[in-house]
Image 1 (tube, rainbow, N blue to C red):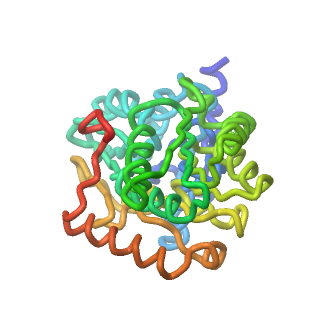
Image 2 (cartoon, rainbow, N blue to C red; image 1 turned 30 degrees about the vertical axis):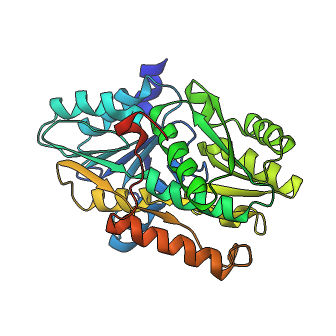
Image 3 (cartoon, rainbow, N blue to C red; image 1 turned 180 degrees about the vertical axis):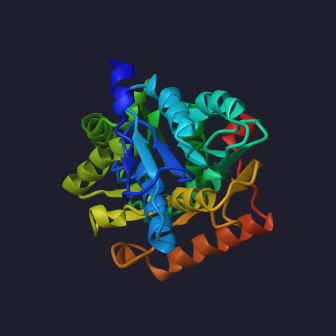
Amino acid sequence: MILKSLACLSLTVVAATAVLAEPAVIYDFGGKFDKSFNEAAFNGAERWKKETGKPYLDFEIANATQREQAMRRMAERGANPIVGVGFSQGSSIEKVAKDFPKQQFAIIDAVVNVPNVQSIIFKEHEGSFLVGMMAALASKTGKVGFIGGMDIPLIRKFECGYQQGAKYANPLVEVSANMTGTTPTAWNDPARGAELAKAQFAKGVDVVFAAAGGTGTGVYQAAKDAGKLAIGVDSNQNHLHPGTMLTSMVKRVDVAVASAFNGVTPGVTNLGLKENGVDYAMDENNAKLVPPAMKAKVDAAKADIVAGKIKVIDYMAANACK
């Protein structure tokens, strides 16, 4: 059945035209409308289409076996470049890229050492440090929370940066942390996210940061219902609940996808605050929640991180969070 469905391949040709030499993007679990990580990739692809007037292909996987199958089918159709969204796409890209050495590939959130692959990773710990500061500065109880999606080193990296930023702003702050699960379903479980958020609120937490993909929508709704503050991730999610979204830790996956569509540069690209790859979001939806004094402190820390005066521990490099 999988092979049969793949023959029809729900490949979305976003504009009706020949498929040869069109770029392609393959989303991971949660889909391109998860309001977070995958949707940021989708927005980048859509912006590229609008700017260039050219079409692209995309595919949303329904199960893990489709990653390699879809990528291989894309390559066979002549798609170029092919972008895999998420660390879970790494092994598939490695296999397929070796079999199609004349085509270009890009992987987001993983490193694949193949000559025709660009590995795009981010310094999530730097952006998380800033929103951790904001959480601690906004908290009235001195207790802030973190809710991650799948318990993997990448999400621990968000948590580690967040803890460092919170304690930088308030050395006495208490940080509660929970992971949603250990399987890919942890990225799309809003009910579980809401449950974890409510449990943290019951312990006195009044600001929570969710790095959990689609699961985060449950966290944000729970915060709104409880009159607490929440922090979004990956995309600017401030608009989801204006008035209770303190900010969002923006990860420019959209820029990464659009850039890859314009041409892959093989090797590793690491994007942090200095490269405008991560940041905190400010707009009309959260302006009243971030007073000038808070913004000034966060911007000063941002400048110090870029200048190297503040060293933010990378959990994935040090495997520790102090």
